[in-house]
Image 1 (cartoon, rainbow, N blue to C red):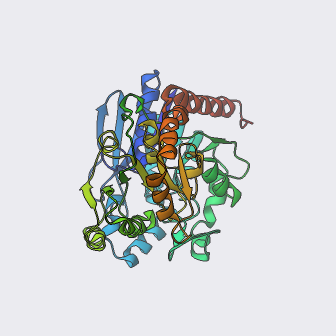
Image 2: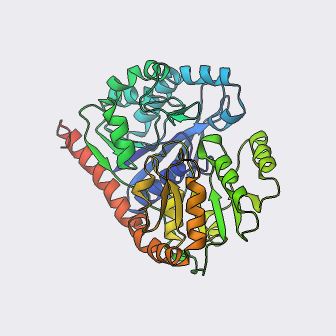
Image 3: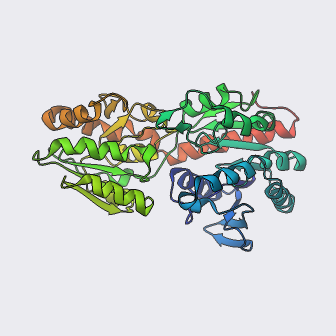
Length: 403
């Protein structure tokens, strides 16, 4: 097959889970003999760039909007609103994509995150007669900010502004040939609220190669860690506050990741004299060698948690919020502990439990790698996506949808 992969960000630009998944899928499918072309975004005002890397052709096209995707954290809220309004249906980007689809002539299109490209990709694909498979990594089709989290609360249903800017998407998404959720949670939430009506659905949990880097088992839970973006909805502030209850207990917290300078400075300030170390960006392979337990304290409903799966692959138990797709990775009492982030003292109690009950820690530690086998099966994961793409293409050629 000739596959056109569309992703707003693609390594080395962008370091999130969705980008890592899009890259691994593209490289894996190219390694299986498919011709893979990746279309991703470049900064506004630049020139189109085409590079060849590891069997991939990567086309970076300049975004036509107020600023680039990676510049969003530094922008004023009012500017962000105008950006997202333009992103409801960016006709200019749609025409650029249509031109590229006709020039590259793919058999099928696989879309990952599309903020910046906008849902105009659906009309572009339809006009070109190309089947399209959408991979859901977040809440983009329900919320322009992709997290369904507002004023410190998760949105059970989209608010009125979100419903208005996503009103065209229900009609647009019905032209997709298939939709894949990286968790059952995100697939059911997005399609349950009206998106992708009548479109064949599948769940394919993310996978990552880390089994060869499993951490040697440790005797006790002494070093806890956080790995991810330093943003309010990830719950890092609440994690720091929880750790202030453990002064003198001989445990420590290592925080890896980056955020805006202002918010990072705030986190350092509230850490005070607590045994908390900020180490900046860190590769998972290195980070999991430093800690005994990973904490994923997300306040928002994550679609999936690649870092939780990576932690299990590395043999490190996880304390995780009972939110979104996290319970599909972490089984309470088996490879980690789940807690309700809205319950006062719940996170503190989980940390205390692992400190005071070494037998529980050892049991969780012993189960992590076994529980993560599906998340480390790259070939099985690629086969699932390959099957979805081949089925969608076959039924498109026959003039019908897969069942």
